[in-house]
Image 1: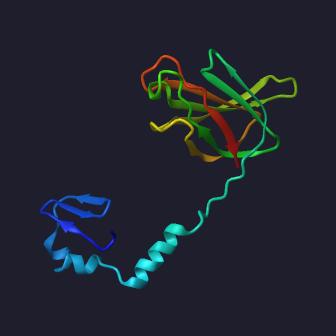
Image 2: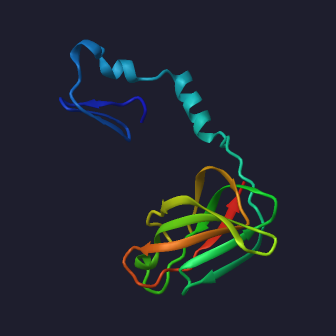
Image 3: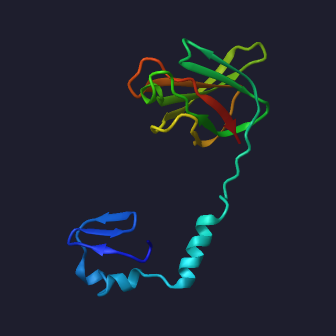
Length: 174
């Protein structure tokens, strides 16, 4: 709870937050629990903030096409044009071997093509680590900045132990 605190000589623990280190006596209030406790007005405001809608709005883009290649280790996605892509959603899947087959690291690239489908530019958007989750879990990842491209390539680099990687569903968003 936000109004409960436990202080030891090297650790301050407030609910799920733990601050490790030695307190500096001249900078700490005398009664720490009284300084941390919140009034009922603050508690109700805290509950309102937790229930409030997220200020981030993401519009999922329709994929014109998507294709798996290289033994299902690379997925190419062609978004509807013109579109600035801000990130991607991934629905995690597991193969028969369970969580060991879940994708662990994905490398994402943006490719710009010419009118004759020749590659004009390739831009690496980064590597993303997917935490261990249950099958069917949807996760959202943002790029450092919005980017345009004709093809977005997702390379499934590693899994959590299995040679086979569970096929994931990926969608792009603005």
